[in-house]
Amino acid sequence: MANYALIIGFFSGLIGLTIGTTTAYSVTNRGNRCESMITGFTGGLMLSIIYIDILPEAFSQSGLKTTLIGMLIGIFFLQIVEYVVNLKLTRKVKNKLELGYKKTAFMIAIALALHNIPEGLAIGSLVSDNIYKGLKFGLVITMHNIPEGFIIASPFKKSNVPLRKIIYLSLGISFFMGISGYFGYILSSASKVFMSISLGMAGGIMLYVTCGEILMKSLEKWKGKSVILSVILGIIIGIIISY
Image: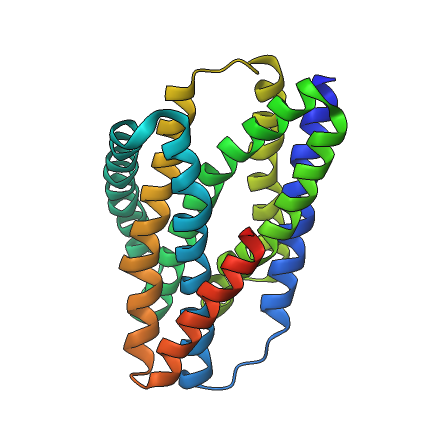
């Protein structure tokens, strides 16, 4: 049964992320305004996922204090990651605009990979109780991962990374979810404190990336109200998906 949890977790991530990434790459470039609206929309999606899905679940596991500790750990960890990514990319990428997009893309990918770990644990835990519950939750995660795939792919597309490499990245992220599903089945009685800290870390990392990278880049490209409306639309769509 642990193998079933691994398979459900892996394909729940892969199918949704693949649909999202291929959709992002199929959208043609229509200028700064369209680009900013798409970026704002993805930022709105991430905000809704953080505040409606991740953090409330973390609070329910072990309360506010534990979740905040997890968030602080996640933000501190991402500060280190940002420094390393900046250091590595600055040596390889000379174009400042491309550098910015690649940095954002790598940070989003790391944030979503960490975010998928507690989701995988949840799949494994449900499979240990009832495989049909695990399959149902896996379907929800598949739908949930479609906008996340779009979020990952958008900045990579702007930095001229081929779709083939993004599919490989999606495979890597899905692998994290599959392995988490496997261990979630084995450790189905995992500590609620551990789950709360994990979810808090994911929430803190995604919040930092959304506010510090995605929304800032959206407003740098275009200052009009259309960007704000696209953020609001992203939040609304995220609410519908989470519900």
